[in-house]
Amino acid sequence: MSLIITLHGFYHREQHCMGVCYPRNTQLNNIVRQLGARWSRTHGCWYLPLCKESYTNLVMALGPEVILNRENLDPYMRSTGETRVQAAGPVSNPKPELQPLYHATQCTTQLTAPRQPAKTIHSANSQVMQAMEQTLDLKGYSTNTKRTYLNEMRQFLTTLGAHTADGLTTQRIKDYLQYCHTTLGLTENTIHSRMNALKFYYEQVLHREKFFWEIPRPKKHIQLPKVISEEKIIGGIMALDNLKHKTLLLLAYSGGLRVSEAVRVRTTNINRDRMQVFVEKSKGKKDRMVPLALTLLPVLDLYLEQYKPKEWLFENHNGTYHYSNRSAQTVFKLAYQQLGLPPNLSFHSLRHSFATHLLENGIDISYIQSLLGHNDIKTTLRYTHVSKKELGKIENPLDAIMRKMKKPPD
Image (tube, rainbow, N blue to C red; front, side, top):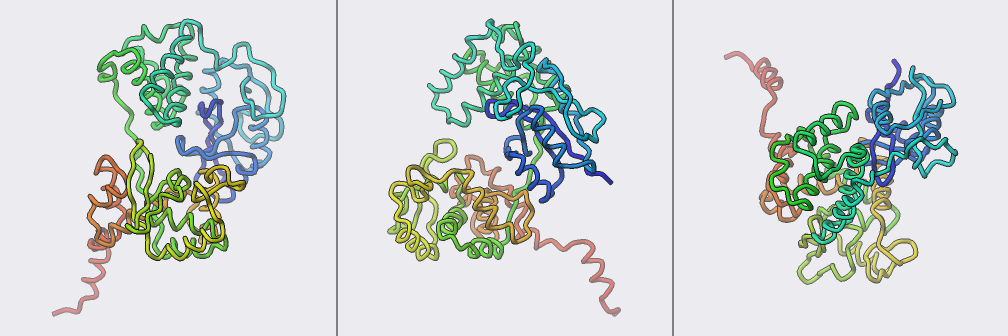
């Protein structure tokens, strides 16, 4: 039976992208990585620049045994109004042609320019992006949030064409979001991001109070945290020969740190007197304190003696800035790829595991909430769904039946 890979289009990091979705498969992960694909946590898939070269390379690398499902990709390309070109190489899909996009800057093949660039915003809405960016700056939104909101707003404006965004009614916004769902086939997470951007513009920039009250949001897929056992946490980290990598992962796990928090720890954030690590300006611009493990100190001392970091605890190769998020993710993957763990685990799994292990060790859920920096206790309560402590109290009905059958008669 042939493997089916689903392709879809979306706008991400200032370019049109081709999402590549398939069931968990380590071999396929290696193939798409070699093609230059990157993983998007926002969209939950690998992605390549949306252009002829990316598509052709993907087809050639996968071979004839793989079927490419373009059902969600073609509507996205048609919505941009681009011309089509024929993809080279053997294609198992009955619709092999792929639209190139004028702004696919990462591709080296020269493509025919379309009649109208997909990213063009009509002059009727020329003031929207500037007004939105200014308000985001004045309100102090993070760089990632600003980038996401502006990208989503750009997609909205290019679809509007000559229609002015400021004059749209709530019903017209509903029609647009329905178009995003049914025609473009966007994921629930992407639609939520686009709705957040639109809500910000109409309520924060144009001051239309309660403008989005009548607009329902799509139900999100509720994912359970991906947890690694205590044994494999230690086994993966302690097997590392690189002292810097070992220290980074141990610190991240022992403090329940996000990847962005772990790489941004400063040398002055380590408080040995109080056995705490100061996490500065984490998600939501909140500071918090997390515990410093006593057993981490010998490893940390050896690391400080050998590497002698200055400002940042984990510096980049030339010592000018902190370690990047991507480098830390790579360190995690290298540490755990030999343990046969599922490929969908990430650096964030250390944080999930930290919280779950605390819960299983009897730590109060409100204290775990404080350590993780969650605003809402509901976010922390999801760890109860994966905790062995709670699930272990429940006897499986099958086990109960078998136990009764083995019980000797009176």
